[in-house]
Image (cartoon, rainbow, N blue to C red):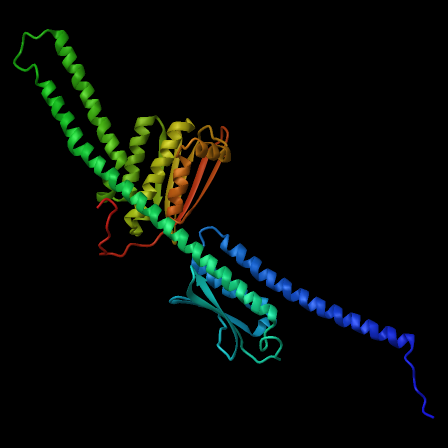
Length: 387
C-alpha cells in the first residue's frame, strides 16, 4: 500500500505566503509603472508652465520625457511629427515594435506620436507594450493636441497685439507729422505775424506793445509744446540716429526738464541691427519708465542701462525715489484702468521677454527687462510700422 502525504499546515502557509508575495510583487510593479506615467504627465505640465518657452522646446521636452515612462526605458525611443517638423530622442531608431497615436487639433490631423522599442521583448497586451501604455500614449497625444491648439491661439493673440501696436505707432507718426508740419508751422507763422504787427507804427502805446510781446512769448511756448508732443509721439531720431543716440538725447532732455540726473549707458548695441518693431518698443519701455518716475517716484537720480548680451537685450531702469508696493500698485492700476507698469509688461510680453520689478518704500525702484533679439539681415527691405 502506497503512502499518500497529506498537505500540512506548514505547506499551506508556505503556499499562501508565496501567493501573497507574488501578488505584492505584481502590485508593486503596477504601482511603479503608474508612478512613471504620472511623472511623465507631471513633467509635461511643468514644461508648458515655463514662461516664454517655445513650442519647439515643449515638443522636444515631451519627447525626452517619454522613454522613462515606458516599461523598458533603456530600449525606448520616441518621435513627434507635427506638420513639417520632427522631434525625436538622440538615440532614436525605428523598429517593428511600435505604438502610435494621432495628434488632433480642431478636428484635423496635424501630426503623430510614435513610441518604439529598439529590441524585441515578450508579447504582453499590445505586442511588447502594456495596455496601460496604450492609454498613456493616447493621453499624451491628446494633451499635445491641446498644447498645439493653445499655442496657435496665443500666437494669434500675439499677432493681433503686434498689429495693434503697429497701428498705434502708425497713427502716432501721422499725428506727430501733422503737429510738426502743420500745427507748429501755423503757430510759427502766427508768431512772426504778431512780432511784425506793429512794424512802422511808432505811435502805438507801450501797453499794447507789451501785450504783443507777451503774445509772442506765449506762441513760442506753444511751438515748443507742440514739437515736444510730436517728439513724444514719434521720436524722429530713431530713423536717422538709431536707438542708442535717440535714447541718449531723450534722457538728456528729460534731465533738463525735470531736475533729475539720468545716467544712461549702453554697451554692445552698436554691433547689432534690430528690427524696427523691437527698437520702437525698447524706446517706449524707457519712455514709459521715465514717465512713471516723473509722475510717482519723486526721484532725482535715475540710472538706465541698455546692454546687448546675445541672445538677449538687457534693460535696467533704477531710481532713488520713494518706492511703492509692487503687487498692490499693479492691482490698483488694473482696477482703475491706468497703464504705466501694466503697459510696460504688455510691451515686454510682445517682445517675448521677461520683466522683473523690485521696489521698497523710500528705497527706490529697480526694473529689469530681458528680451530676446534677432539681428535684422543686412540689405533687407524691412517695412517700418509707420509706412
